[in-house]
Length: 108
Length: 154
Image 1 (tube, rainbow over the protein chains, first blue to last red):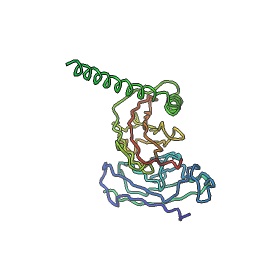
Image 2 (image 1 turned 60 degrees about the horizontal axis):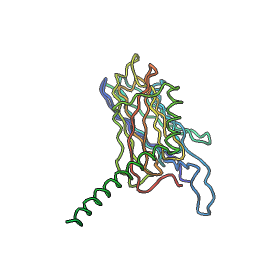
Image 3 (image 1 turned 90 degrees about the horizontal axis):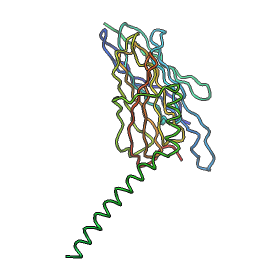
Image 4 (image 1 turned 90 degrees about the vertical axis):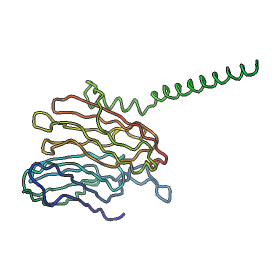
């Protein structure tokens, strides 16, 4: 299994009240539990099941993922810039692993 | 003269038959278990209230060549203020092994209600969007996607 690696794109600078777009992608196989490997054995379900974004400790966006979400889940969403601060992204998978990423944004 | 007339009739019959067949396929489609499951899920989500059909911007390809990666984008008109905002958006699909695809939870901080992701579709089917606002009102829309190669590893 390739290493799970989160990536994200947040504008470094924004003006007050500007609606920015945040793009994220996490490298993950998202085994739905229905696929079979080369030997015909079932690959057990292993997916990213939740995604959460905080800005300065306040939750702004949340998503629940099901096996119908593609491999390497891509998620994009808007945010209205109000002040300078840090975004905290958090992904969780079926084994209870947590993957996090931080991104700073300066608002003027 | 007589033969031409006969051809005309048979053509007409042929068209009638074609329309009839199309109608039969369309009406029999409703009986799919997947659709019933999706309706059941909508009922569960809306707590029996049902969702009002609304013209929501749901961007999906008409034909998806690869069902493994189908881009979904939606945008719902909302003030996104503390008094009036879209709280949850559910994406459901009626031709996948399970009806649920994703649930998005929005907050007024986001300024607008939109999101993009990529989903798997195992065959040609309807993708349904159910939106819930902070007043517990429900809205829905759906879009049909034709899938050439399925994407659920079935």
